Amino acid sequence: MNPTLVQRAVWLAAITLVAAIAALAITRRDAGSHNNLPDAVAVPGTENGYYTAKAAPYGPSAAHRRTACGQPFLKSTEGVAHPVLPCGVRLYIRFQGKEVLTQVVDRGPNVPGREFDITKALADRLDLHGTQTIQWRFAK
Image (cartoon, rainbow, N blue to C red; front, side, top):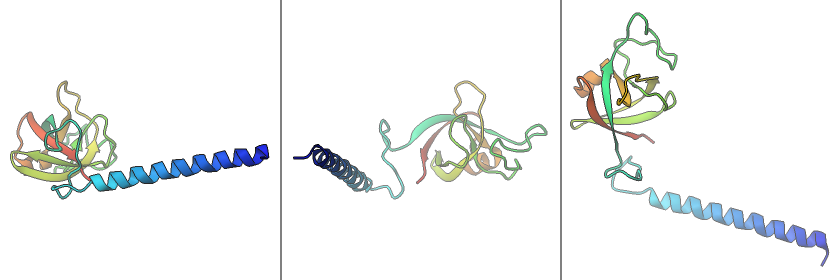
């Protein structure tokens, strides 16, 4: 057999194998995403698909008129500040039986031990005052 034909056959077999593995991975991912929670994504290492975190309310000030994500920071602005998650990432926040869909609108907090700042308007919806433990998960 010609060496060029052997190389082509090996490349074709390798490409076929990669395509088969990719198809299998996609099929397994889709089959595992159906669970009893309508939107929930199974999160490894959590009991119920939610992470826990410390959070506290914060509001606009004269020095903080815009969020780090570029939007005006008004008394009515609802969202969360997080030091790492990208602007616009949608999250569910759960506190004392109330759950809201929100998004990252700012950077912060700058307080050790606290993972989120929650805008005053959103904290009022959740009836969250002071530093509290919340549950959160990513939205689809």
